[in-house]
Amino acid sequence: MDKFDTLQIFLKYFSRILMLLLVMPLTSSARGLVAKWMGDDTSEREGRITLNPTAHLDPIGAILIFLIGFGWSKPMPIQFSRMKNQRLGIILVSLTGPVSHFLSAIVCKLIINTIDIFANVNDDKISPLWAFMFVLSIITNINVCLGVINLLPLPPMDGFVLLYQFAGRKFHSWYHANYQIVNQVSTVILFALFFIDDLTHGRIDPLGWIITFADIALSIVAKLPFILLALAGLIK
Image 1: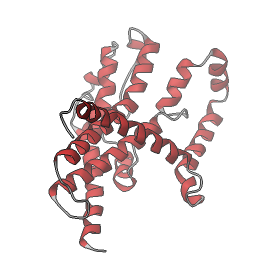
Image 2: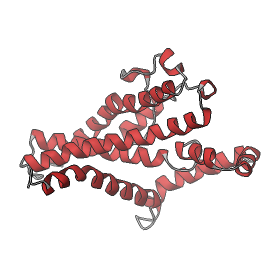
Image 3: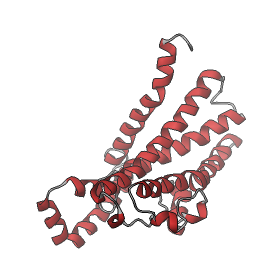
Image 4: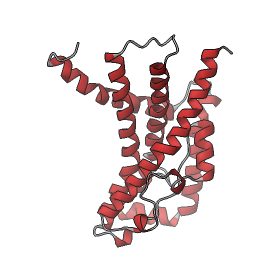
């Protein structure tokens, strides 16, 4: 293993630490702010609307993010019953998590694109700018992954909460009647989605395909300002 490979490994884990210290508090606090806006200040009263990472770190979730790049923070204390519009509040809070991850990814991509345009960074040569862009790329990937996983329509993900809110009474009755087995099957499906890529040697990877699609879509969004600037003749 040469110096370049060693530095990449160090920066990968350093990026995950930054994710825990900077991004996760931001995305968690965003949920609390939306809940407060909708009428529930529980998160604020319990000191959870803060960028202090110690208020949000879940021990197991933090360890997993550091080791494999996927994990979670402490659940935000939110009482939907206190909201002015409970159904709308549930929808907005559930959307806040994935959307905040996607926005974080877009911001990172915008910075990377800006450096690409205005600085000459050689991918084969170690430099402070190269290291900075590498860290941003890792943080981007983690955010895209977390955003996509949060939107999966499986309990306990935000995607399922959204599905539940838009589904009809028949679905509600069916879910409550089969609550335990649905949650157990969902856990099995989640594990299958995480490991099917390795088990099939890359031939089947639905979660990876969705993440790749989301990453491409976010990359297009992050490039739009530069396309507009180029069309206006402000940049080449």
